[in-house]
Length: 354
Image (cartoon, rainbow, N blue to C red; front, side, top):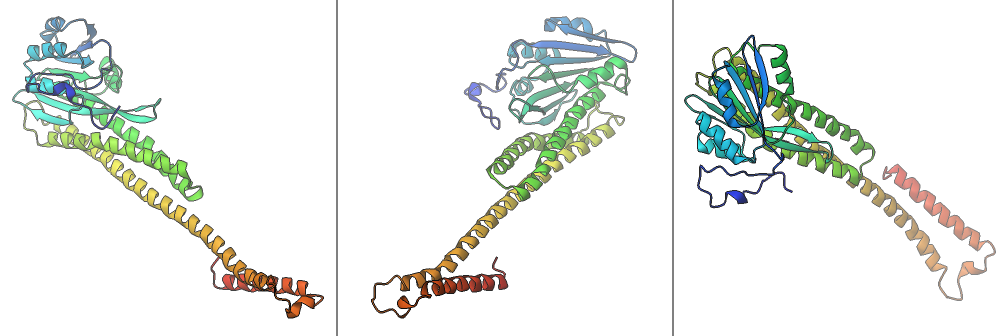
């Protein structure tokens, strides 16, 4: 199963504006959760049908509607009709390979972004499509699966922590984007420690396992970069948005959010460069070890050349060789051989060839 590209076979020959689910179904059933709140009151319920929303729309000043599971295109279409969401936006919501982006209309802001997490079973990064549709008093979020990094925001709402209950619904959207970006930084810190630990391993014990680790982390960082690069561009666009939904009071928070995502992007780039340098160091170390081995083998070869020459002379079959009848000739030959080896090794040492 590919991670970098999701096949778009379901959208072939489909008329634009007709939502079609693209991706892998990650939930058996779709879940609708609603949090209605203001400064003094909060209600948190799980709905069975979209029609139940009507009783809450006029009752609470601020509503957060969260949909877990994107495969139910009909349910997404019902939400679209209820809140007058454009069909092209609905099409992007159910496309899990949608590039992170921000679209602004007269009374709404649509945001698509990737939520990253670490699959501990496979030891690799995975991405989840998250879409947010912001209206004046309603925030609708769409996710692929149950369970996410939004739970700390829900706890703040329940316990009246921070500004989230007192500010408008746009601030809630900022809080959700903030925890997604914070999770980017957390994942980068986790991967960064592993990448930096490779430094000592490469210098002390360069082997095939180290090479596999380097390639593995390069793939994961490229996958991370695929999500975080457009996310940075999307969040940066909040700085230039002219809309009544983002007031001067909320604008500084979105500016700070851009700084956070820029930090994550810089970390990805830094660690990618570090891995490239580590790969170069690994190759250099392997080549140096190979050169050392070849140097030793060459020295042995050179040392044995004169020994072979001496042995070749006295291995000839001529009858008259002066030294043949010399009583100590055998020992003299060994003396010459050893002296030759010592002189050659001494010369190599003097020249610092080893």
